[in-house]
Image 1 (cartoon, helix red, strand yellow):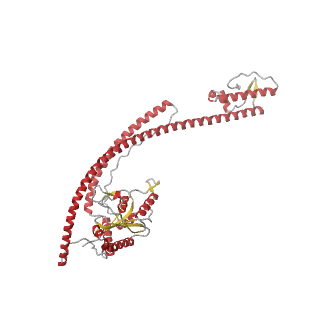
Image 2 (cartoon, rainbow, N blue to C red):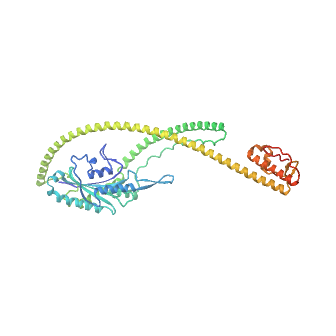
Image 3 (spheres, rainbow, N blue to C red):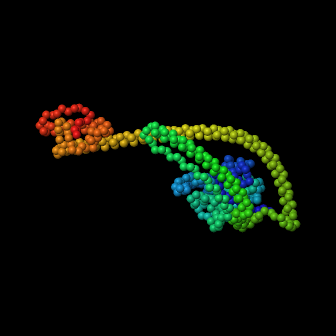
Length: 492
C-alpha cells in the first residue's frame, strides 16, 4: 500500500546546508532552477525532462523574474545601538521563497510507459493538492507549480512568495514556523540562560595629542613625547586585552558545560513541540483533503496481523520487490560507473579549486598592499590639506590685521586733522604737538614702533608733515625744514 508525501520548506538567497549532508547546500536560486529544470541545477537527474507547467498565478519563468525584481527593490532600515539608522538591501539570509513538494506513489517509469492509463489519477491528485495549497495560503501571494516526470516518483513542486509582505517573508507561510513564532510571543521562553560573563578590564585612556605650537622645536618635542605616550598606551592595551581573553576563554568552557547539563535536564524545548504539533496537524489535514480521496495512507505500513487476501497481496509485493531489486542492481552497477567518473571529475575540480584558492590568496595580498598604499596616500593628502588650511588661516589673519591697522591709521589721521582744525593741536618749531596722541601714533613714538608696518608708518608720517606744512602756510610763515624719515618727529 502507498502513503502520502508532502514536504514544506523556506529558502533564502544565502545557501544553507541540507540536513544529513556534508557538502549539499540549497538556496532559493538553486530550488527555482531545479524546479525549472535548468541544466546547472539538474545534474542529480540522469535524463532531465522539461518541467510541465501546472496551475498558478504566474508561470515559473515569470515567477522567478518577479521575485528577483521585488528583491532588488526591497530596502530595510537598520537601527544601531547609538540610535542612528541607515538603509540597506534586504539581508541575504532572509527567507523569501516558500516551497512544497508533493509526491505520488506512482513511479515516473510507470507513468511514461502508459500515460493514458495514469493521467486521470495523477491529474485528480494534483488538482486536490493545489486546491488544498490555495485554501491554506493567505491573500496576496504569488505562486507557480510544475510537474516532474524524470525522477523516481511523479511529484509536484509548488513555489510561492509572500508578495503582500514588504520583505517577502516566506516564514509567514510556513505553518510550523508560524506556530513557533506565536508560541514565543505568548509564552515565557524556556531557553537556558548562559552564565554571567566576567567583568573585563577596561582599556586605558588614549593620551591626548598636545596643542600645536608655533615654535618648531617645541612642536617637535611635543610630537616625540606624544609618540612615546602612544607606544606605552598600546603596550598597556595589549596587556589588558590578553588578560581579558584568558577570562573569556575560561568563561566559554564553563558556560558550555553549564548549558549541556541544563539542556539534558530540561529536555526538548517547548517551542520545538509547538512546531512539531503544527506540522503533524498539517499532515492530518492534508490527509483529509488530499491523501484519503486519492486512496493514500496517512502513514507508512505498520506491523499488523494479515488476512489471506493480505498475504496474497504481500506475495505479489514480494515479486515486485524482487523485480525491483534486479533493476536496482543494474542501476547500482551503472551508478558505480558514474561514481567513478564523478570521482575523477571531482579530483580535477579539487585541483582546479586549489589553483583558484592560491590565485585568490595572491589577489588578497595584492589587495591589502593596494589598500595600504591608498591609506598612505590619504594620510599624505590629509597632511597637505591641513598645511594649506593653516597657511590660508594665517594669510587671512594677516589681512585682517592689516585691515585693522589701516582703519586705525585713517581714524588717527582724522583725529589729528580735527585737532588742528579745533586748535587743540599746534605746530611749534616745525613740530606738531597734541595734548593726546591717537594710540597708533603713540606706538610709533614708543618701543612698539616696529610692530607697525612700514607702509602705515610712512603714511602717518607723510600725513603729519602735510599737516605741519598746511598749518604753517595758514599762519603765513615760511615752511620749516623737515627731515626725511620713516616716520615724522611729532614732538613731545
